[in-house]
Image (cartoon, rainbow, N blue to C red; front, side, top):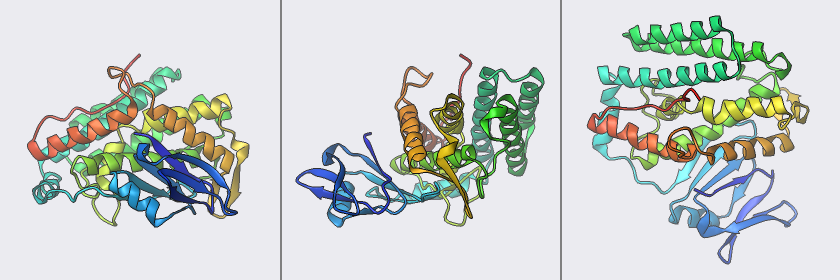
Length: 321
């Protein structure tokens, strides 16, 4: 799935003789690509699309994801069909059933397993790993959705605090989102927004409504089901390249600035981050060498089969290796 990122503020995407052109504020051509090869466009902030360009993309089944300059997921434009009404009914119903609880626990179990595996690879102390595993055991005993959500929150706090303790030079103490107080938190939020857009596309392509959640509560027009499925890929797709990028100096915290909205990523840092996550999405996962991008779409189809047809659901998580 060739993806085109548009991040030059004030520019616009135009269609000319079969090519998509990024045109700068002064009329200069910033870049171009064959229009028929693009299947996904990500718009970062104040970037426009001409009507011919947007129409062409929608006609060929491409999606356009809109993110703010701070990495907030705004929404999408896509020529995907509306979900089948019976699927919508099934989605609304399943959250109230035992199957819904099983699925919610699957999302959290997968995320927790990936977090434990990442911490193990980073050399975390045994007591920290055991604390995480104990939360996993509590998850298996949970019989209420609110308990599952509470365990997920506790695991995430312990995970990020452990990462910070393992790497005191990272410039990161704990997960802070609104607003982010350091470059690492800002990069994590931006990466998660990119991932959310891709997961939302996978669910829409699978015929599911991304706003009808199971683990995350439905409401306030947020893509709750996409947030559910996204839990499986946070560590592998975003955390790994973000943490390793800062630790290795590929991502430079000095290219971030402090504003009234918290820490903002500079253009150079944002460009490197986008490239890092796209590279990760295109790299083979531990599962039979499949790319992470392809796995996300496979998981969307797998989740649809579970919700609609009651088939067993197998979640994705980082394996020991």
